Image (tube, rainbow, N blue to C red; front, side):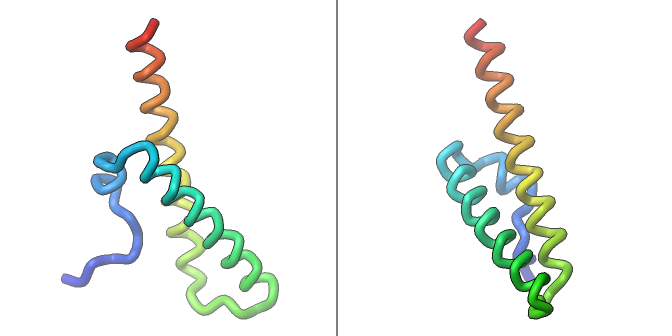
Length: 75
């Protein structure tokens, strides 16, 4: 079975905070480029927009969960 280009949830969970932040900025840049391509009718893979958006949401969710558990551990 071929590997998908999208990131799996398990891969995100083992990533460090710095890796998640780097990946998030890369995905946001890609999302901007995809939106620009869509506006100029040059979008080759419309499904990629959905994958990028959901991966960004997964990363943000994971970051907020980690922040919440860190706050709970401190206080």
